[in-house]
Length: 305
Image 1 (tube, rainbow, N blue to C red):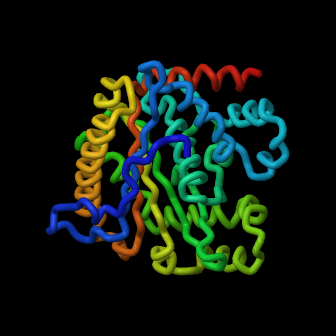
Image 2: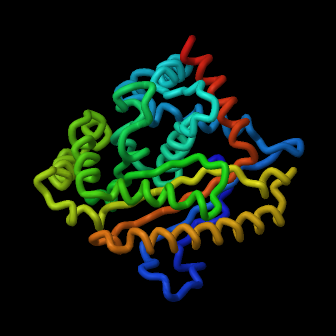
């Protein structure tokens, strides 16, 4: 990864509310960008986005065919982006968080992008339907786990904003939504080229069949939740100091406890909820608008190349 990881722990390590249950199968990751010449490294962050955009904007076949043609790869990837010119559009730049999540899934979790969501969405001016990311991880060579991700880019992650993402996670766990995501995995071609073991690939497809009970998949189900967020603490920094790291660790632990407390209270009654594994990923940035504006400017350049 290109960023420093401050927290990479089970939620149980710092959950002090003993009345909260179930707290198992939940983890928290906090990562931060660094500084240069007393400035947060915006260019470094943008480079990370564009170095990884193909993971979600192009199919596996396209990525392979353009592997030695970097400019062409970026041009084709940008053409699949949804860009909005509407002032105040809450989804403006929303794909930034999705791209970052795909990058984290690749570099941190070593996952396979079996459905590049931005590529497979129906309309370049629509948000990607369903989960924001879809991955499979091969476990111990002969088993697998399914990862359906949620990604948000918020101006704040105070309590008032947490309800929205929790509702989004709740909707993604509805049986019909899970079955739809499973059917997408089995119907697109990426899984055939990404998983070479035919026996395992067929087992995965059988497990994800709409004829199978969704209850059987829940022990294999992981929900990574990326909250890319504007952060007043980060705005005030000029270096990657120990004091800054400690302040961010404490803040993100506080936000993680608030998030999972609200999530458990709202989603705890979902069948087999305790078997589903949740991974909260927190990433602070100084100013959302600066990042979105730069991203859109670069995307416009490539879309029109």
